Length: 148
Image (cartoon, rainbow, N blue to C red):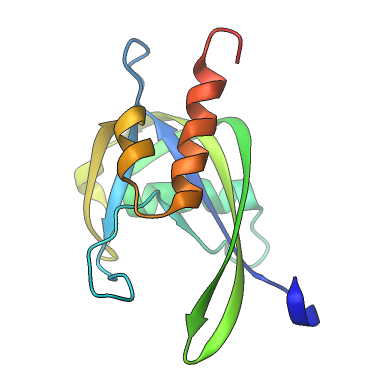
């Protein structure tokens, strides 16, 4: 990315409910607000720990932020964007994985999250705060189609 600096990297998941008939995914409302002060509706994600793979970091972040354990279905791709931090433009890459929940409880999320809840994939694709995350949910929907 621009300037030769390594982009900031995070990893996260579109986590499907175990219910095959009407797939839902888990979304979170982080305690941190958007730049304009509004609440954010997001997918669980965060920075991998040192030595942790993107997938392992994503699985851990899903557990911490959404309260659920999950397993990998497939990699969905990367979202790339810029944001401002203390007057500096920061390049960011977030790798998303499609996952299926295997256990846990969405009430068991960490202190960085105000709420976690299950919504249909269609609702997530329409209501998530960030365009890149809405696109990852649309990719998940395509993957789940019979010929996807």
